[in-house]
View 1 (cartoon, rainbow, N blue to C red):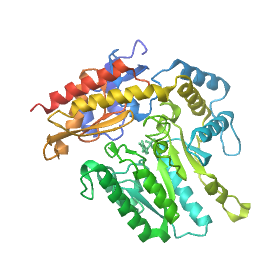
View 2: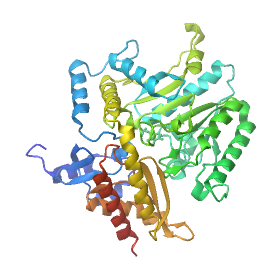
View 3: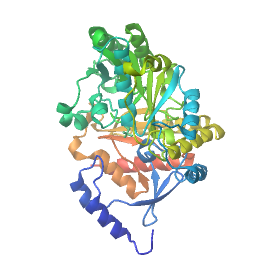
Length: 454
Ligand SMILES: *Cc1c(COP(=O)(O)O)cnc(C)c1O
């Protein structure tokens, strides 16, 4: 920090000028929140030099750690060449190289890359693409989407429309287009009352089939977060569910749009979550980990059949009329390319397996805790649900802010985390070390003890 700038000054200006996302600003005004000025590996460093382990990978984006020397170099080298040039009417070296690379690593059949700059737009692009595809196929009535209960696909009007979290979305319902809600295979609280994961998955698939059949002639596609519904509370789907959804989409000829914004780039233990079930979607949205947490970048990948449907004579107006100013930004694409190099060079996916097992062992320990209900894990992501009553699974009243209190207690101990209601989230940078992961889990456990010990 410049020598004449103090922490107090920054905190004061923050409270005076910044409106924070997803934040009750009245509470914020009363709180003392660290101001981050630097980062190093899995750590965030505040303006007083205090270090915090980044337990949520800076909103689920960070992969190789903060301030990574090689990513920094890739960024600086690209900045010395060109910072930005448009893809509207021009092409760019980095966006070409990255698109080729993404197609090489993506699930089979995804052959075309459409860039944007955040997860919400990546999903929204997918929805528009899917609908216009149906129009080009001669099915303009196929304009509706099936989405899951508890779904989260972003905060723009279009991406909220396919969302299913009332606390975020209900206020805006008059602004949203209508979608068809299918039950989420949330086994712990199976919406269809089934007792085990397999039965829950099968029952949810049967209900999905009923909905698809009922709406077949007006459906554009099914949109979902594969395997792991992140913002909905780290809900993990039973094995076979995604594969079942793919089969239904094939049988009824509707498009499958997967939102891998949170799950993509290694989080689940594979490059993309779909790989666990050998599934290839028709459209796939990616963002968060794409540029390793460095810069806003997103992409929507489409299969050749969809791309081809948009080809035609200029006057036929088959063009996909959509695009964002910073589409394919060279700085972000250069960092994304370097990140993919590091995935290979550091054998990151292989190195992840022992950490995933280490996390499982910690969760098994936590399962005995009297105030811990369901524990959900998918790769290096987990949700720890706090319950008022272990036997009845009764959650704490949300107004008690138990999840937030656990995170505040963890912060005092040097861990930054952010909950989803009563669910404590574990979502560290993939490059976290074994010792750091122990510290993270030990700290969360102590903080849970502190906050639930009444
Ligand atoms: C975060 C997220 C989004 C939205 O991404 P933004 O970059 O915040 O717009 C969409 N889908 C999923 C699954 C996400 O986790």
